[in-house]
Image 1 (tube, rainbow, N blue to C red):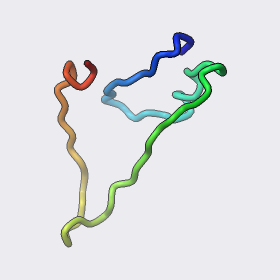
Image 2: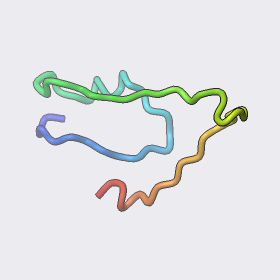
Image 3: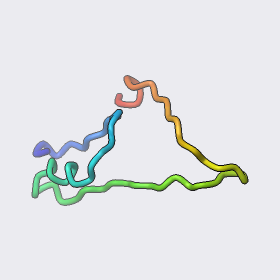
Length: 61
């Protein structure tokens, strides 16, 4: 990424933080990412997974 423009996108596969770092030029100055962990319980019930829907064209616009 040498043009100085940020990157936003949706993926349908796991994202490797190391791959993100490899794709950023040394002159970029920073990489900001967020990782989270899903809690095991919510409202007293076991969480077995997450489902996320997005309207891709709008999310990436």
